[in-house]
Image (cartoon, rainbow, N blue to C red; front, side):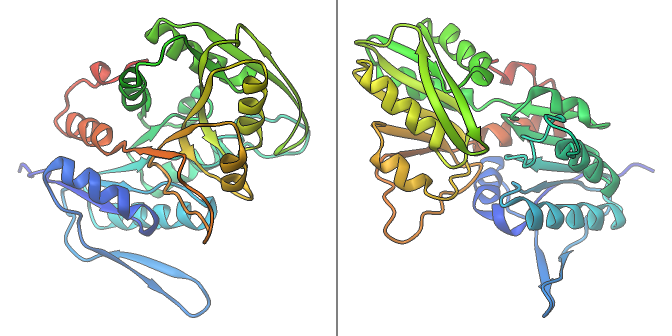
Length: 316
């Protein structure tokens, strides 16, 4: 007997804003689901429609990580137990990606643990965007579609038509990403070298490359407290940059991040919507430009569902 493996897309609570845009790009609607919350804070997601025999895509970024990842795990488990044909986790922002190795004694490798949890819950495939470390793909025992947000950022940067453009990396770890942007755009690259006093606190910083007279775009995968990227922008401006912009896939933006960005030398802060902007009352967002990854994920979902190759969807 053959089954019609219908495509169904659902969302956990924190990423519904993005899942609705993905569904719109797919020409469909979000599936019906609900979450029951108990008085002690425990919650139980449930599907309000049959998923038997369906290929189920569940959209959820893990910000802030703990509650959102657990809701995703429960949704995957529910779909698996409801006899879905396949369960695919669409995780635009994959939390714990900074914990990809033991960088000091007696710490966990959080990214590997989360990968194990997703597979144990019944996940058949994972889609994500701009992992903090590419090798995290190898932590999974299921296929991983690693999408690059460069496919939305590069056209935007080209449309700016900036003269004397340079691409900058805010630290040595981001040099590979910045090099890819500079190679595709055919412009020089600048590397900012930093030293940290402690986590989330930047000590000194300097630039490697020609800065004076350049319009600089800093490229990063995620910005948390914005300490590094704003210090980098201010330093580049002091060294003679005409303008400084930043491109960031995942705007985590915790603590005083909005205040720092507003007060910095950045003229524009270009982000994707893998994480929604969540400014507090009175915080300035006038420098932000939001580009959506919904069409990228919709394209990859369509190709995966129809068993078509996805390699031509990647810029790098």
